[in-house]
Amino acid sequence: MPVQKKANVTELHTARHDSSEKARSGMDKILVRGGSRLNGTIAVSGAKNAALPLMCAAILSDEPLQLRNMPLSLNDIKTLTAVLNELGVVSGTPEDHTLMLHAPAITCHKAPYDLVRKMRASVLVLGPLLARTGQADVSLPGGCAIGTRPVDLHIDGLRAMGADISIEGGYIKASAPQGLKGAEINFPKVSVGATENLMMAATLAAGETILSNAAREPEIVDLGECLIAMGAQIEGLGSPVIRIRGVEKLHAATHHVVPDRIETGTWMIAVCLTGGTLRLQKTRLEHLSALIGPLKEAGLKIEHEGDDVIVSRNGRPLRGTDIMTEPYPGFPTDLQAQFMTMLTLCVGAGMVTETIFENRFMHVPELNRMGADIRVQGNSAIIRGVPDLVGAEVMATDLRASASLILAALVAQGETTINRIYHLDRGYENIVEKLQSCGADIERVANI
Image: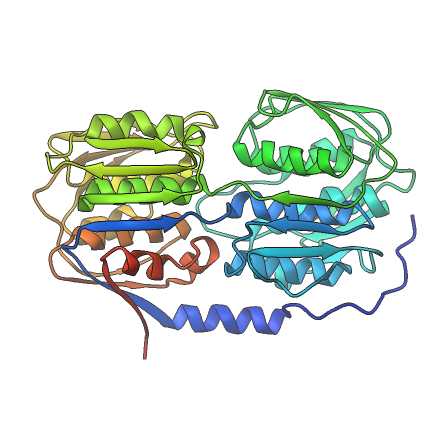
């Protein structure tokens, strides 16, 4: 299918703007003076990990897609908006956590390196772009340095659907001039990104696509429900086998982004450390079943009132416990660093085993700088509780490690300085302001 002539589109966020935003946030640092309990109410934002694939779904239709409960201030949202703009996706002015995306014509089939290198989720334009236009050139992605996270499962699945794909000059070059065709795809390992990419591509493929050993995360279900609202035919969401029967066209829809379970879990762990009581508004406790048990075992009280979760700690010492990260519904890898921070102050010892990403212990040296007793052995870390953490100057290495250092700083004696906080701006909306509203002594300052 030919790419249409480039239309006039609203300028959203240029690569230059995005780079300057990162440069400014990279020059900032966060100062925390520990010792304050957290008491108050926090409205949980929409899930970044759901919002990004939902934005890519706009490519699949020439009619508008309205997304509500969007975490619009996140740099990852801004970066992907710039990628979509490059392809011809038009956006209204974002307001009140709502983003309107409209792709009446795909004007370009290339997602350039300068944008995609900043965020791994940009590779999710590959499937929708190929399904709608029959052609896609997408740079190999970047993102947090927590592991290799290859895109081979994405590529193998699209090849099974009839695409011709090569890797040239750092780009995935894909074509399917006759359109994609349904296929039976059995993932050799669970992959959230590959499941999302292939599910979107399959909505416009001829015939039925069956994804076996598919990811089951709430963000996968959220994407599927949005695609169904757009007219897709999908069965098996939330199970290891997803069936998609392709349709000729998808239409306009409005979708409410699922609450961020990782943000919710981060606040729950924060209360474990600091004490106090937090009411977490508009969240989904059922999405955190693997976290609830270990937190209760450690000493957290958890209550559920409608869409709100109330968490408190009664002042008893935290107790050590073991966790192992696994694909959903197992313990989420995106909460591993935060949970490890909690274990640093537990009575006894705990073990954290990471099975998803091979480089996700980079926060350990920084926590040890603050007085933690953590030893890494292969893909496991042994954490022996210490009486106190002590403020220090530390450096954030990735998004979730950044959150873990803030949690440590909230309970450390004295002042902690956290550098390279641009990682936080990728995934936590207004984290400093939310903590300030609940009594934390925290501020963001320019690193002169």
